[in-house]
Image (cartoon, rainbow, N blue to C red):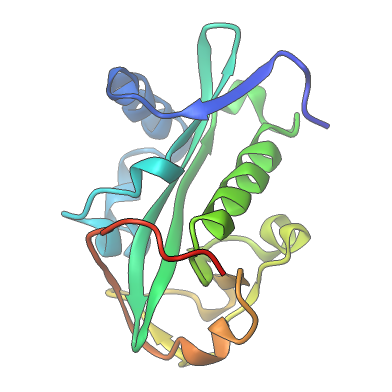
Length: 175
């Protein structure tokens, strides 16, 4: 349950240092070698979908989404990183960020959200494993950890091929 003191709002440029430190604390230096980071490299995330979580004036979490194409599917997103202060895990803050982010992504007209993560955690939001071999990320990825969430029926079936970050050019027309 989301405590009433939790505030979710758009990320601002002044959050950059705190977010960098939060990611370093949560994931360590090896995070930059992961395939998901390699997809996002050099392409800014979708600003309208970069959210922070605060308790009072303390930043305790964030979620970002990067626009990607997957083969011929141009309206997809890569979720990540999702980060919550290690001292605040298990309190529902990550769940609140994911729910808010997915709702905003759907409203913006995206069709599919992809991530590399744990099925026991992300499965409760409706993420499902991507069929083995359907998508290709740079570098190795455990196929059991490649998960997708359809914002538009049939989007996962249409998304076949390499996953590439793309510059976000604005929202799609609403469905």
